[in-house]
Image: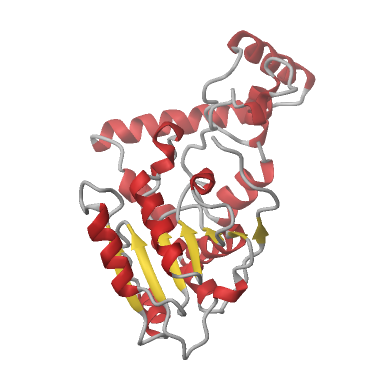
Length: 288
């Protein structure tokens, strides 16, 4: 619902010429306290082309007609939205389908976007507890235990890891189907050292609360087993914040919010003492 973000940043700075579509307007964060039709009108005034899941269609139409009559929304603006929709339909028809990958590359594969995403991820990193004592000096021998697959061969991530030539790694499957619990525990114990700094990285999380955000009992047991044998242990979650509630609330935590190569790099910079996290969880998250 931000005119500045859609028109100044997306349209002008990023040069995006495609359709802008709202998220579902029935979300409480958007619709609470608003009169019927008001959110839909604000979405059009902000510059969105398509209003997704309007709460009250008749009220929205009435509000839009009233806004045009009162001069709060021009017919020219509506014509531009309709024109973009028609142009997109024609492009899909003539090209034999929507070129998602081309559109994604057009938006994301630019130096500006890479820099912007890095800044956003860096600002979003959140911590629980004192994680400063787990950051590394260059001469230390840290241990990273991967819960799930971390496929990151980007030059920047590789360079960060190479700062610690004696760093040890252990890769554990996220569930007992792929790695029995006894084997996972033995693999971790071989790698960890009681006086070293251990970081447990949890990957492959999900957004579905019914599936506990991808946190399996196997992952929880592995973390508890490692903590019992190595007190200098910190947890790093690459995914949904609510996944943190399934682990010991006293365990220091870095929350990176998404499981992408860019997020891995930003989080690793904190471990390497090259950046400081800005966000702090002020309270313990409730059970979901």
